[in-house]
Image (cartoon, rainbow, N blue to C red; front, side, top):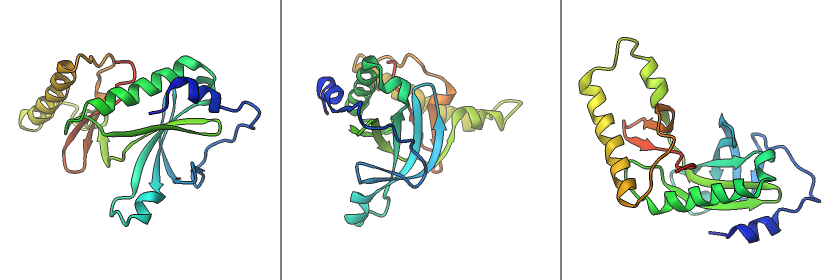
Length: 182
């Protein structure tokens, strides 16, 4: 991981800000394929990792969380993203999203993590207006609790735990996301 000081030195304010769009690249490595979401701190893209293609990886996709321009100007936002990356890397667990790296490309600071296909728990809940059947809900509850138990054993508390920060992948595996304000 890069430290905050080197990140701040690497953000060259004389470089013109370039808008990130689908089809663009970061670090001459990550090709932005799809905008997955926009939040308060930035955007999340599905990206093809050209290094994985070169290595003939059958799953070349990653998710990139990119700080928006307002947050990139705030040194505390960089510290926050760096800490989120470091915390997530120490939380290796089947029910916690895998985070790979924290980096920058010109004026863009980003975190790379595993790309998941499926849906957030808050979307799944809406599919059951009368409540999800216990038989379906219990494994989700169990896996969320197991992820949080693991984090708590490492003295990390997820301070924004909500259905939108839980993801159910296409294999019905549960992942807790976004330890950003843990």
